Length: 102
Image (tube, rainbow, N blue to C red; front, side, top):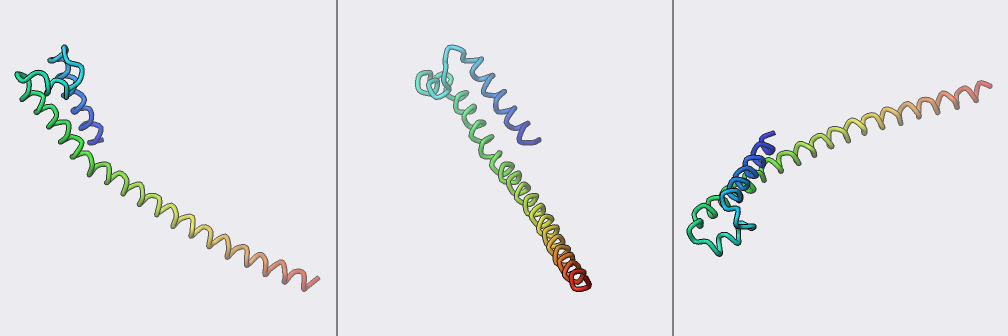
């Protein structure tokens, strides 16, 4: 959720910047050609880079949470598999025992 808010804020900042400088198409082009808007362009790029940098921990946290969920699912399936194997062995023993009786 926080990552969504952060990325939306970054897009809004970039959108406002592009709207204020509608004669420019690319932010980097503005930095090169228009010196009067240089601080604004640097501030926008700083917010953009800061947003990307700050989103990395959230991305990694999401990946770690996904890995933990997958590990829990693997443990659950392994437990289920072991129980099924044990049940099959018992059924095999019972069927062998029934064949011996008949």
